[in-house]
Structure formats: C-alpha cells, structure tokens
Image (cartoon, rainbow, N blue to C red; front, side, top):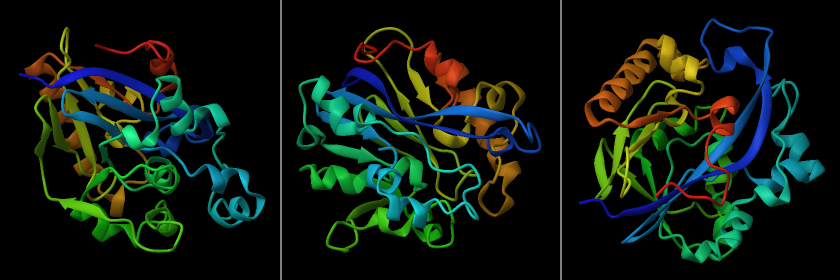
Length: 266
C-alpha cells in the first residue's frame, strides 16, 4: 500500500533557451520558455523533495552571476528566479520550513536541479540526499554541474547517500533509472492515494514532444542519445503498464495545465 498522501509541483524558476537543448536535432533557432520544477511529496513516513532548483545567489548576486553564467558558456543567460519561487518560500506557503523535509531525491546534478541544496542546508534542512553513484562520478566532467553547488557554505562536500540502480524510496515511491541525459539520471514513479499514479520523467523528457516522438533531449552525456531514447521508451512502457500519468519536466504548456500551487494532487 502506498504511503504517499500528497504531491505538489513547485515552479522554482523559468529559463529561455534554444529549443534544440531540449530536442536533439530539432528546433534550432527557436526560443522556448521552460519551467524549472521541483516536486514535494508528502508521505506517511515524511516529506520528499525531488530536485531543488537553482542557487538563488548565483542568479541574483552580480559577481556570482557573471562567474557562473558567463555568456561564453551560457549563451542564453541565467534563469529567471523570483523570491517567491525559492523552495523555502513554497514551503512557507504550506506552513512548513526546510527542516520539515526528510529526504531529498536528486534526479541529476545539473545546476537547475541541484543548485538549491546549499540554501536548504543554510535554512536548517538536514534531510538525507539521495543521488546515483554514476551521477557523482560523472559530475566533475559535466559542464552543466556547478561544483560549488555540491558544497556547503564552509566549502565542505555535502554528504550524499550514493545509490546504484532502481529502488523503493518509500512504499509508493519508486526510483526509475533513465540514463542518457546524464550518466545517472533517475525518474520517479509515485502512487497517489487516489486516481492514477504520476511518473515524473525528470530531464529524461523535457517536453511532451520528447515523449510523443521519442526524441532524445539535446546535449546528452557523452553523446548517449540512443540511451536517452531507450529511457523514454522505458518510461512510456512503465506508464502503460501501471496506468501512470507521465509528466515531462520543462514543458511550459504542460505545466500551465497542472493544478496551481498550493493545490495538491492527492
């Protein structure tokens, strides 16, 4: 029986970039607006965050922004992130604080998914952080990972629990291996107390188009586009087998059709 009680998608920022970053060999020259999402899952055994968005300081501090979003490397600039979109602000609207988060599940270590770890630690979050060993091993060679996102304010490495492969996070929450976009990318299958399960693709599928046409995201780890396509097909099979609703991760039109925060899926 599932331990899941509620699920909230959290809009943590938006980013405008060339569509080819989301669809391999498609959309070059077409600018899209992409939501940067995290997900809060309330269970009978505690609260889980799937991803944590960007580091607010790197976006809003001029010196940090210039260093981390150098136009020579980030042609499309930094994401847009308001005060209200910071995860502590989302939690506050639910009457919670970062200390009320019990587990953080990082789908992959890119700056827009793991950047908020330091702020959560700063705000009193002592949650265990799950990440795949393959993801950690590849991070030092991945330009979309900001190394200091993985450090605390004292410069010490954040303590991760390194996992390998698929596992049950809690009953009703299943970690699903979907490599390709990154070396150790993970999606998440969530059994809600009522209705259909939700299958969070993460960056295995940025857009609904990735799912419909089985097209890989752009900029896959070491050119592993065929592995990314296999992961998309795997997600679609799992969704069919379990009746799950498969959610792409950076599709603004899809996001706008979801329930507005703070209304949960339950």
